[in-house]
Length: 278
Ligand code: FAD
Image 1: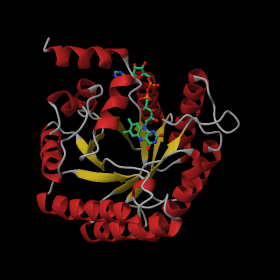
Image 2: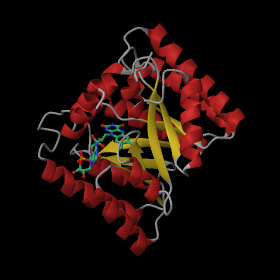
Image 3: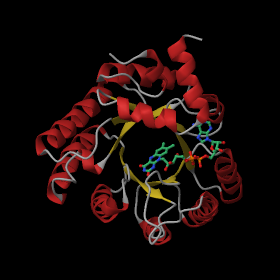
């Protein structure tokens, strides 16, 4: 059973609790991106199981009329087994999404997966004519080229700062430099894209910059934040802009919860208070 303190960051262990969470968010005008927790499977059976779980989730979602989509990690559906396994499983998910006209995101993992992820994304989103998005990481030096390349490809780009500890030869290592390039990429996207910009950040500076750029260029954008992080801001922003909350769920919640707690001192204090009952 998932303990109450983890429920701040994780939408329960089952599809039913995840859909209940979507309902609560939708009631506050917040849309949801569901992610079944799991990554880096060497065992093809695990990868196939999670791909099936996503397909079932999409069918269940279609019956509810709730405003939610999914975001999938490539290594969760077979990329560590083979590129072919990943693509077969991704195709099975996208087929169900096609039937129900649903949106599918691909998360971006460490740099060894970037080419395989972007190649598959471009092929699928082009064939589908949209209805999909992919995450690009500002900390990777290659991202400027990727952002330019995807300007004319249908679909959405979620711009994030980047969560993986990458080697200095291929990535910016200082927070200041990552913030600088994040802003530069936002500027490029608001100028050159026809829409489909997702600001995947909790940073008030980046969100304010996106709002300014939207006022200047009129380009459509959305804001994406994680469940349990700046939830008041999510609600406030949702009065003016499309806001999506990325909500993970599933049995493998422990390591995700640990990452969320350790990334900020306030969260460590929150966890300690919860455990001590204060
Ligand atoms: P930071 O640079 O960490 O912080 C900047 C400021 O934001 C802080 O000073 C504070 O004011 C505010 N802030 C940040 N965190 C908090 C908090 N917990 N509570 C209160 N205020 C806070 N990374 C990937 O590599 N691949 C992915 O596919 C991916 N998908 C993501 C999807 C979503 C929806 C989001 C929100 C992030 C995703 N990330 C992904 C993670 C991302 O790369 C960053 O590691 C993460 O978002 C932290 O950067 P930041 O821009 O939010 O703010």
